[in-house]
Image (cartoon, rainbow, N blue to C red; front, side, top):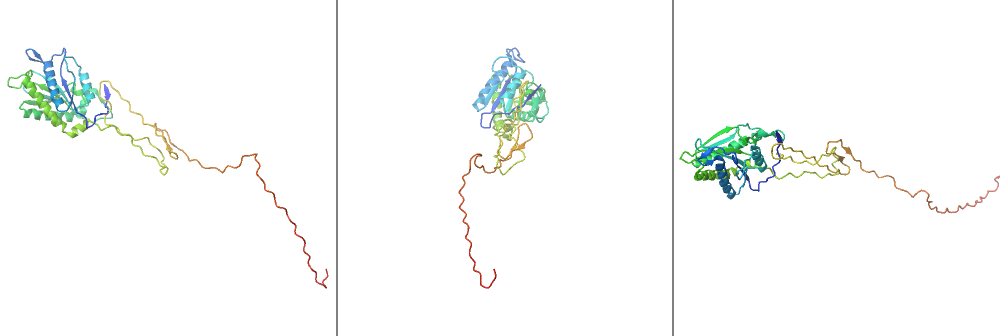
Length: 319
């Protein structure tokens, strides 16, 4: 399954989004945490507590489920990819182990090749940022005196998410408190909320997820002195991403707009056809009177013949 990366529309001035993914739900009970408490209830309780803390810190928070319902892994990942979250935290609970277990994907960091990525490898573009997020959380839990361990594994829906993503599994704290203990849940939620404030301060991470506003086409006004050989369409800055990655989604690249040619310049087509140069108009001879109309003729002056002049003949000279 392939899908296309799409251009993020968020700008730096808006509220940043955190996505919370409480595991299980509905008929998926998960691990048994206490006598009457299942994993699905613990993860939802922590998510609701954490949502309140993050909202108070001016975050926009989205949950993959806010009730006791079954949500597929694909649906969870699709919601994460559409949210453009700066952090995606998947919440789990267990009765085994001690403290907090942090997991990131086992995929290898990769660079985007074109615009399409396989659905099961979407997280490969965010591996380094996800590990960095896990380190931030581990440091925060250490300051809160909560035991923490880290690891990497193949885990859904993290492998399908386009965001820095970490799975947080809540185990007993080692002091007799299970993941169902409300005081223990509140400590974990407080610690994660504080860590998100530090995470928000990493400008390089935030900017790598949020794109600048849509680019405005760059056009250069034509002048008669340029006379270029060819004229190109307006240059549009390509976004880094295409559409949010969701199962089976596709996208079509926009066709460049046509630009009307200026007088005396080359005519270019958006599909790459050969350009032709329009020649400027050349003025012809002046237009005379219409045919069939007689021209006025001025009368000629009379011709006067000069009179002969008599020449005297000298005497004694024969004529």
